[in-house]
Length: 171
Image 1 (cartoon, rainbow, N blue to C red):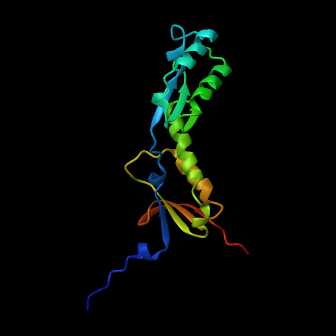
Image 2: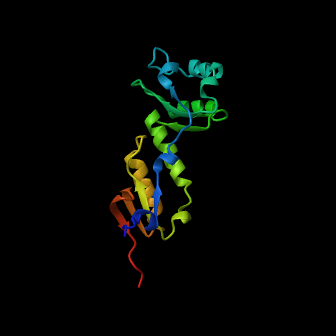
Image 3: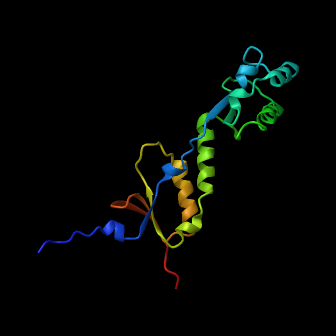
């Protein structure tokens, strides 16, 4: 008589959540204030406003934009607001920060749109290895999102997990 192999992982009822599914895929553009300053360092209001009026917005159309300044220049707050006012009608998302900060912001926004109710009273494994670089920010965010609803949260693969959280029984 042959022994029957049983896939205990598939029978365990564990749900695998792959954060790569929520990885931002949209195009990103960086607006560097330095490129629009006098000598790359000085903001002259009149010149800056003229530059903004004449700015070709095509590179930012339908993209997520990070507004930053790579020069050690003193930029008044209104200047960042002015740039945002020109980009807002054509860009998808605008943040102040570098491309990495924009990526993290978009990733967190995607995680925020996850329906936590889908994981109510479930045993969830947050997939640990993959092709894309997933930051600690995303893992912390998904833990915060799932803890109020999940029965348990684990990290890794269904066949080899690290326990992260287990809901205590209510008496």
